[in-house]
Amino acid sequence: MPQMAPMSWLMLFFYFFVIFMLVNTMVYFSFIYPVKTVKSFKTPLKISWKW
Image 1 (tube, helix red, strand yellow):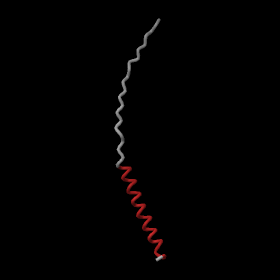
Image 2 (image 1 turned 135 degrees about the horizontal axis):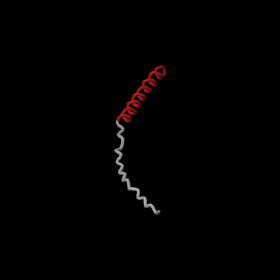
Image 3 (image 1 turned 120 degrees about the vertical axis):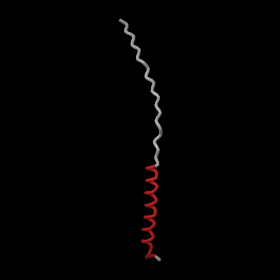
Image 4 (image 1 turned 180 degrees about the horizontal axis):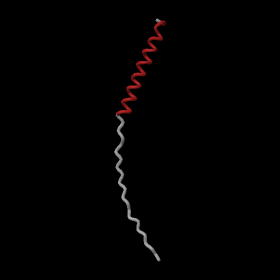
């Protein structure tokens, strides 16, 4: 029936909106930052005074 179309569109919108929010929260909270392993070797600065 065409009279009931707005109701089904509204339910469809809420259905997709809830799934969208659910996926967004799952992606936001399950994001794992990559472990940063930086090996920085400080080379000693060799200053040779020529005077």
